[in-house]
Length: 458
Image 1 (tube, one colour):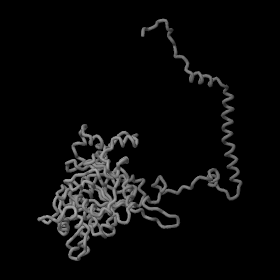
Image 2 (tube, rainbow, N blue to C red):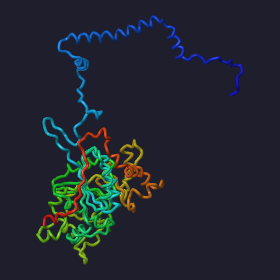
Image 3 (spheres, rainbow, N blue to C red):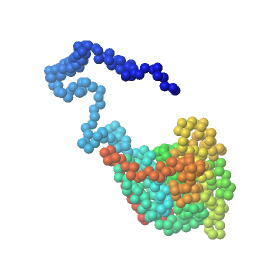
């Protein structure tokens, strides 16, 4: 725009409305201002003077009574120790009933299997996620070798001020002890990469003591993104005959696996007491006592009698192949577990779920959801609560190259969650010192002379 020389030069900017109002205010009478100020002071001082005189003239009154009269509805606050800035609370692990004793909250009990540095590296992330999200006390019963135990102990030692009680029990088991139990069964073997430790999932009820009546099992290559108490509550829906709950996949029809992909043993709710009572797995100890076990007729029905080498032939997917035979032969002991607790990267491709689009509706999610047709979850929106990163062909899923590949669909969808949970520090599980007034602790015990149930009953 060309400069217009006809516009007069202004010595100062034009008056703004707020500046004009300020000048008008300054022209008000000073006498009037003094009157207003004095009146306001009298309005404040006189009522307090009258109240003060009244209480001093009243018999039995004290200055403290003034606080009560002025705010009769104010709740009484507890006095605080000098090192606390907030009122003390009853431990969140207990419920206090009026006039009754403090009742402890039932802990969430996990049974985990970790043999090797790699499995402990993954399992540590799983355990950390449990402690990050759990609203209840937690017990970990970990069947492991010395390498895994050492790895976990180093990290658990960093948790000194837990917000809830934590109990960790290591069942330090030599591989020879596990192989001996498999040999006493007599006919099972595994072609799965998990090897013998994978078959141990069939014997969890035999390793843990009879005082532990139920537990959650989760593979080490998974972690929670929600409160595990919600999963523990699923036990409440068990009917009398139900002994196990795991995800079922009616759409996975792989004949070469004897359809064992119809289930996933990666996450299981185990009623350990019922599994003991039905004598799930066979043993020469039981055969000598003429005590029948559930599994032999189930295995024979699906795989035929043991082959020339004494083992069942062509059993696929490790322990899952045997679990499939068991629940196929005795379907009344099985209850389906929601896919919310088994969002897997393997055959079901996380069901098409991913991070992002935080305002997505039910219809948005259903529009790209996959692998639910002809299953118990058809038409239901999958709400991921436990994510499972299997079939990635790597020793430790959290170090998979795909997480840093911008062109990988799984990496884009879930990579940030993996990075956060793997990188979150154990130290961060502690309460700040000034808030640690709960009677909570982390206890660790190692059991070395581990005996299976068949040995204990011999």
